[in-house]
Amino acid sequence: MGPSLQLKNRAYETDGYDFLENPYKWDESFAEEMADRVNIFGGLTAAHWGVIYFIRNTFMETGRCPDVYQTLRNLKLRIQDLKKLFPTGYLRGACKLAGLTYRAQHIHPSWLEQKGVDKIPDFLEKKVYRVDAYGFLIDPSEWDEDFALHKSEELKMPESLTDEHWKIIRFLRSRFQETGSIPTVYETCEDNGIEIEDLERLFPDGYHRGAVKISGLSMI
Image (cartoon, rainbow, N blue to C red; front, side, top):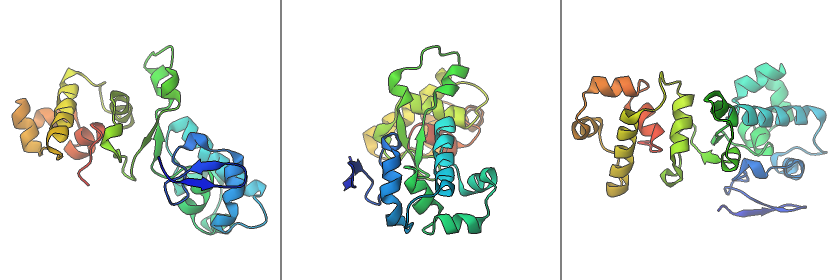
């Protein structure tokens, strides 16, 4: 649980830099009351709200905070326009007021529906994973199998996770929990009796950016 930020109407849990810990706790009051903290004085205009709601709607639809290029392109804004609206920057201004950071990511129910899941569990609709700028899970203890499924979908792997995939994932998780470190690609192949070609077939994005990332770990 992060530090509490007391604003006029209520307290919000933040990460210590005034970014919301949980994007689902956002409301318009948060944006309005935070505006002067990001050097926006005189209240938020329709132009501000247009950017804020584009960021939030994109997050709710895709599970990712849109990057600055995507926001400018979709809203037909120039970088100078954005600077005038949010003088402290895109991340530290617009995204902050929208209750997001580039780390925010969630499992969106739409991809489960595409997999033929009729009833989306309530807990998944509000599940949030904290990831870094490269999509790696910040806290390995927050990992679960749903994260692995979502990440494999995001990486557009050619097939769903099979028993072969799960064997490697669970090996990495188990070794990390036992030793506090991630085994090398050599150890992973040797201990699981597979060749490097097998690993490439299973995780085409690579050992680090594929197997390790899906396992909720990071070598960075």
